[in-house]
Every structure is written in C-alpha cells, then in structure tokens.
Length: 403
Image (tube, rainbow, N blue to C red; front, top):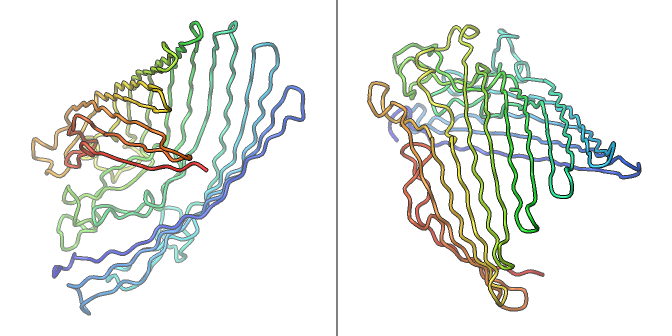
C-alpha cells in the first residue's frame, strides 16, 4: 500500500425505479395493454491513496448518473378461428444526467469532452440524450387441437450502462462518453405439438442481427507506452487501453428443440437441446485509433455453441418432491488474458463441461417444508473465464414456511 497506484476504493451503486402494466378486454376480439417504466441509476466513488502526497491523498466524490423511461402499447387480437396476432411498440428515452472525471492530479473533478463538444465545460454536456423506438409483432395459428405454428419479430435497442460509458477498468481502460445504443432485429419461428395427452414437443429457429454493437476494443493509449505517463498503466497490452465502442455487427442464429413428458402420474421428464452460431464483424474503418491486431485476438463473451439440459421430477408419497437436473455446455471458447500476448496461454482454446444437481423438498408440518440438495454433484471444475472457477460441489438446506 506504499506504492503510488495503491488505492482504498470506495463506491456506491444506487438504483431507484418503478414500473406499471395495464390491460383491458373491453373489445370483443382485442386485448389492449400498456406499460410504463422508469429507472434512475447513480454511481458515486472516491479513492484514498496512502502513498501519494499529502499522505494520504483523498479524492473528492465523483458522480455518474442517468435516467431511463419507457412507454409501451400492445394489442392482441383474434382475426379468425385459430389465429392470434399481437403487435406492440415502445418508446424508450435515455437521459444522461451527469458524467464526471478526475483531474490528472486526482484532486478535482472535470467534465468529459466528446466528439460533439470537444471544448465541453458542463458535467451534462457530453452525456447522451437519445430515444429508442422498438416495434414488435407475433402471429400464431392453431393446427387442429394439438399443434401450433408461431412467428415473432422484434426490433430492439439497448442503452449502454454507466459502466460501459464511464469505467476506466481499474487503470486498464478509457471511458467513452460518445457511446451510443446498440440495436438488434430478432426473428423467431417455431412449431409445438402435443402427442397424446402426456408429451409436448417444440422446435424453434431463431436469428438476431445486432448492429452498432457495443464491443470491447483496444485503442492507442494517449499517454504512450511508458507506465509513468500512460493513461492505462494496468493494461494487459502496454501502450493500449481497453474501451467500449459501437464498432461491431453480430449475427446470432440457431435452433432449439425441447420435450416435456409425463410418462407416469408422479414422474415428469424434460429435455432441451440448443445450437448457437455467432459471427462478428468489426468496422475498423470508422475507428482509426482502434488496434486491429489487438482487438481481433480478443474472444467474444463466453457462450456455448451446444447446450443440453435434461431433468426429472418425481412426486413421492407424503408430498415429497425430488429433482435431478443435468446440464451440458460445449463449444465454449476461452482465453486466459492474465498472460501476456506473447504467451501460448493467451491463445483462445475450446472447453466443455457437464454438471449434475439433485434436490428434494419434504413437507414437515403446518406449512413448514425442508428443501435440501447438492449442486455440481460430481464436483466438476469448470469456468467461463479462465482462472476464475465456478462453484464446486456445494450443499444447501432451506426451511420454508407458507402462510
């Protein structure tokens, strides 16, 4: 704690909000609904540096804040026998209330500058004030008494979070007050069918096209490659800073098949398989300060290419309920970024794993029930981020009382 970079970091995240939904069935074939959503996010932080003058150096409190509001309408109606159509629309607004940064000496607060206002002097001058408009629709058609065909479409926007915009990554990144919302077009088509009275099968095809995607990239460090002058002295790649930018286009597409069956009155079985294919394209031409080489070797956030989930639930006598669940994820691509780029361990590698969970619920008396089980029964050592393992075998016991 005697080094200049040593810091006692104190911060607070605070979110307040409210939401409401309304619907009416006053029309013969229409179900009309509306919703309202409001959220206020505030982040405050300050640091104390024992190894910096005046020993210690205490920073003033920094505040970043934004507000989000959404208003939506939806109409679900039946134009004819077996058909149902739903159409909806929402308008979302992002209001950047405040964005602050520390001075080079860490003793004062200054506003951010941005492309739209390079000489900005206001703490709200380089915060975003933007709208998202999100249409969506679905149509379903009943095929006889046991089948249903459906299709959905949605065009959605996602606002960046405070962390995406203002985080300096513990000395490894640069904030980006110019960060804009990302948008996606999403299609889904599927068919479900009931076989007999005990087995339901459903298949889905899906695709999501993400544009202006918010990605983590490496940009040239404005302070150069010397740790004494670098803006990002803790970066894994000396001379470069990580930064969030609207630089990517992503395609997520795949298929999912699920089965649910009750072969015996007290036994329920379910299983699903999903396949996901992802592609990403970086638009480097729009970002001259982004390092093509360093950004391209960074892997996408970890998601499985193939995923299988299966489970069984048994209702035993005296109200005892037992479950077994198995989960397999394959085609994971990991990268150990704790190593330097010259190390072989920095190269992305493939991983897969399977876990087993078991549990039981037993009623005791007068509304009291005991719930216990074991997660990761086989003690599988697995992880989504190299070097940060998930939980091993763990036991739990809960008591619940129902009024």
